[in-house]
Length: 546
Image (cartoon, rainbow, N blue to C red):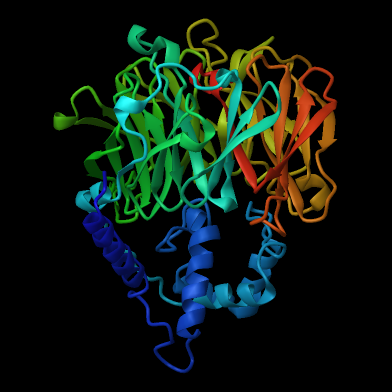
């Protein structure tokens, strides 16, 4: 257990971190001609930037998925032009913020990005250990579920702006619990180990990673009030997490500090920190080399760790963490989200600044192929299915174009089609997520990045055989709301689509709309959710069903 003395030390460290984050730039300009903000406005704009902008543009604003926002770039655009870009977005993939930020906040943010960026602090292993808490002792973990629900059809749902994760019963469409997590959880992943010792509880434990670097361990066998069993903090800004195939370790990657941390999966005790700073594929040293994505490798005792700005996949062998083996594989920039092919051998990940999908052979630990696709690919959890002509295929949506790209991903039985673009499907707007299920005839894609409300509120459904869009579904027509992220239930009979309320993001006015996966008709709406984003069906995720 964390002692009061340790908590006091952590509070001091957090206070120091907050102060250090702002110490790189004076809250006022160096001279009268430079853009300036009061100290209070500077702190407020800094928070807004961290919450909404840093993910794409970087804490140091050097750019990656988004443009470079250092003063050398932003001063040329000027205050008014920057305000318009923030308000209305761009055709290149940046969405509008006029329905999220007040006009005065947009003005402050435009000024802030013309000033020198503050440099945030580092984080030590001891600080992480001091932040580790056990809410339920290991000896008190139940040996069977303490509720009568079908937990393998639970949906673990991110409630982004509430700092919570909701557990929803997929059979009954009922919210089971709202669990306090870190700020703006980005990903939640379940345990995937399939050895005999743990066969009965595969998918029982889920691990969250928030934008604030907080990691939570959730036990789906517990009663709702005890589902949060442990937590720690491994960074100030983070995006992804994964569990080792043997169930012993959890790994989480930081945006800042740029590093990854290996933890004990049972207790969340941090064990090892590895910096991700290094030399990129162009030969340049990168200080802000962020960990964009981490996945357990199904067939090897490794994780694949995508180092965004380096353009490298690091295949990290966890079989001996004291003597950690890391194979660094040069690919392309800037790495983002990815997913495995159906065999679990090939990892497919977006290099969105290069307009390519990267394929890594995790058996040989080498680059397999670079596939040319449309602007700014963003597959989210991705989608795999079998095409009548190309055989097994994978697919992605794009942040920069209303299009789905589909490529062959079976180099054994369909070598002539492998790692080549098979076909594309036009949509009405740029999207973020794509999803399907082995039992479904359809593929679903959202259009979240289009600033037009009617497009942003709709999803496209296309047929796997005809390759044609069969229906455009308007998920919501309420002002200020948007539709995003699809997930199938355990049997593939339902599709769940999230609805954000962009104008009232911090209140429980979001919902999940459930559709019949065959007829495409609405079944029900699950209300009482705050900006529901990623939804992870227990059975589908731990069995790699896409």
